[in-house]
Amino acid sequence: MIEEHPKDLKYTQHHVWVKTEPRKRIARIGVTPELADKLTEILGLDMPMEGDELEMDAPCLHIHRPTSIYEMLSPLSGRVTAVNRDVMDSPNLIALGPYKHWLFCMEYDEDDELDMLFNAQQYTTYLDSL
Image (cartoon, one colour):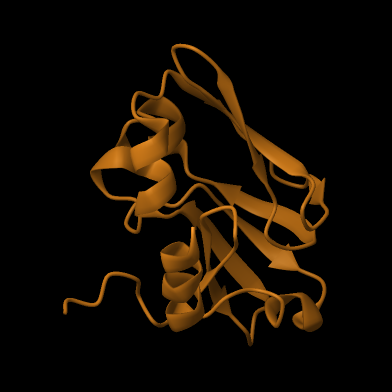
């Protein structure tokens, strides 16, 4: 079996991935292939701005699709430190490489919140249960 979900990432039940740099308390955020497949055509993104304060499980980003808007929830609490301008300019990059094309980076506040996220094996088990 091919490893589908990178083991160095954490995952949410809402199909968002998190790559952390614990020493810097920075997390890079993106969407999993499962969410990218569901979103199909992406017309645009309403991204958070650098400096925005985010709360875990609160709306942080809107993905505009032909028939609806998908509201993405923040996987952690903290401050946005960077936004991926390439993805803002070409949102369909997400579908081309969900693990390659991140959305934003944030400085997270609580290490305990990381423990609430799935590891790769737990995420795969979660997907199998759906």
